Amino acid sequence: MERIRMNLPKGPDTLCFDKDEFMKEDFDVDHFVSDCRKRVQLEELRGDLELYYKLLKTAMVELINKDYADFVNLSTNLSLRSSVSEGIRAVDERMCKQEDIRKKKVIVEQIVESHPDGLEIMYAKLLEFVPHHCRLLREVTGGAISSEKGNTVPGYDFLVNSVWPEIVRGLEEKLPSLFNPGNPDAFHEKYTVSMDFVRAFEQQCGSQASVRRLRAHPAYHSFNNKWNLPVYFQIRFREIAGSLEAALTGVLADAPAGSPFCLLASHRTWSGLQRCWSAKMFLPGLTHRLWRLTLQLLARYSGFVRELLLRPISNESAKDIKKPLVTGSKDPSVTQGNGEDQGSGPSETKPTVSISSTQLVYVVADLDKLQEQLPELLETIKPKLEMIGFKNFSSISAALEDSQTSLSACVPALSNRIIQDLSESCFSYLKSALEVPRLYRRTNKEVPTAASSYVDSALKPFHQLQSGHKDKLKQAIIRQWLEGALSESTHKYYETVSDVLSSVRKMEESLKRLKQARRSSPANPVGPSGGGMSDDDKIRLQLALDVEYLGEQIQKMGLATKDIKSFPALAELVAAAKDQATAEQP
Image 1 (cartoon, rainbow, N blue to C red):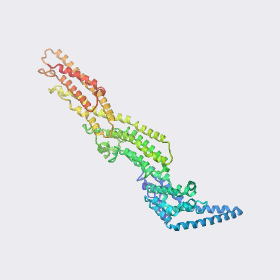
Image 2: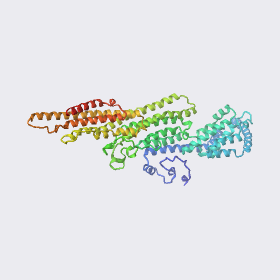
Image 3: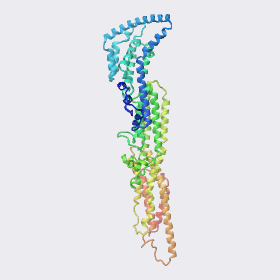
Image 4: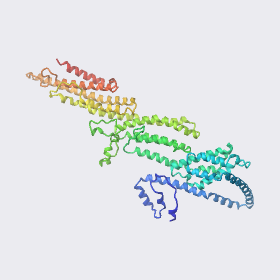
């Protein structure tokens, strides 16, 4: 029963276990671990146990410190017995000091009587932690204890040697929870207000020498050492890193509405960077740790982007041949790549998570946006560094530039994958040129006057890239992708058209030889009928119309056909075929 009555210090809300479990009479380690494993992995359980162990250690030290003074006095008294003569002299000296302290205590009591609730008000206000708390503390301190009264005893620093130790003792006895980092938000507020009070107290000292004596006083160091900043930072680290890792794992999610980023992973990376240096989290004593965390977040995001390059692109076009891989919508069903498969049983056996080409576009857009905002982050960090006297801003700028370079290095590989995907999507339609001969041979189809529909289908991904992402990407990036993808697909298209025309020519020559061999045959069954255009010439004309239309659409996209690899050669090839087809007409 005694164990249950004990009060353990409160831990952060993120702990995966209930601290009161340890105080149960029937507590069993195996059962405890087994129960926790149902909720979290062993590694996370170990991390939570280590964190709570540090909290317990802090609480234990505070408990020991309550009786530490008595222990020191006992040790001192025992050592004094080793020498009777020295002991007598020490007692005499102590009695003299006791008398001096008694006189000063009378002065303190007189001052307190002039403002009887002074210290109580101070403790109460510390507990409230309202915004105007420091001002009230300065008023209480200035009204009840002034530097002028400190000179009542010549040669004695009253504020440093009498008032400050009493304040620290009062805080330790009346507000023992003041230094508990278990609730990081409350801890940050308590620490900030307390440090404001310390600075206000220093302003009450009569001189710089008095301030130096205060900062060298054991009670001053004791007060500062009670704030367990490393544990507070560890809790904050787990909050930020845990939130980011959740967004980096598995299927990518969209950023929340209103975010300047497209993906949740990018959004949380930037929000984590901002949070490190925000007024609600930053503490001057943790500047070096927060700077390291800043670089770690950027490095983690850079590694995440490189990991995305290893994911296969989800083949959305295989589900609907008319649906291009790159769209302008942030519809979750599109941006999550294999989101449809995630809900079905067979997908759970897939070893890798795919990524849609839309998401690849979002990654590039987010990389560009993040690099744009890093200078803004630097301007946020600089004032915080100045607070601790740091002046070497060039090293900070260089480190951020290195992170920026690491992010930029990911863009070319991402662009290549996007270009390749666009090219494959485009050519999957352009290769329909192979079907043109079948449309005209022995079909008596009319002479073609317009381009084939497959050309428009092939250009849809490019139109949607321009219209759907123009507000997210720089035009230079879009232009680079368009030219790259069109160059690759047009090169393949040139080879396809060349093969078709070559096949047509061979077929035509074969028929001519056959005609010559059958001189008795009065007509060419596949040649002109009544002076009309032959099937072979219709094929040539159709391909020429297709290529001409493709060139017109490329120009409408703001591109020059001369900048598209193989297009000039393709245009020349079909122009010659068109001339041949029309030259044979009467």
